[in-house]
Length: 129
Ligand code: C2G
Image (cartoon, rainbow, N blue to C red; front, side, top):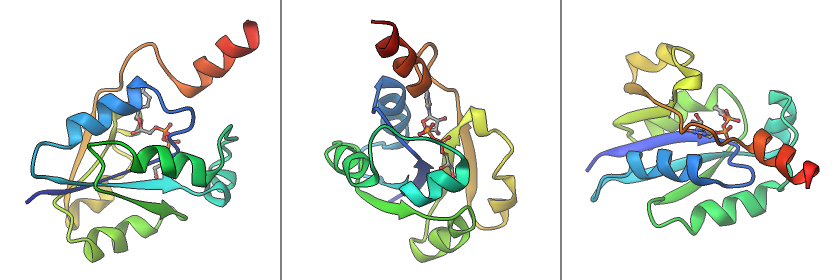
């Protein structure tokens, strides 16, 4: 079976996130999601609406997600790839090229982002109501 890892914040879970995870989880594959902890989001300079345990609960409820692990550092991807014997590391193409250094360990792919939806845009819409 193919084991895939993707990492992200997944705040205000939306259909852009859903479509990425669905594309990454062919039947029979195992999809692991590295969910950014609140501390790691501070490092990323990202402010979240939902705390880690809520974002993790939503991801764990997704049919196409096999397991959710905390993403605490940039560097842990290398050990995650080895520890989980990953076949693929995948991200949306806003990250294109950023993780090519992992190519010595596993396949690295970047999938097109879903247009016209983002957590930032949702926040703006809520504020304008
Ligand atoms: N995404 C997408 N389409 C959108 C919005 C997001 O395909 N409309 C994808 C992103 O490309 C990313 C994933 O959904 O692969 C999660 O998005 P974020 O939660 O914004 O992830 P980010 O904060 O960029 O964290 O180590 C990697 C980082 O943790 C990535």
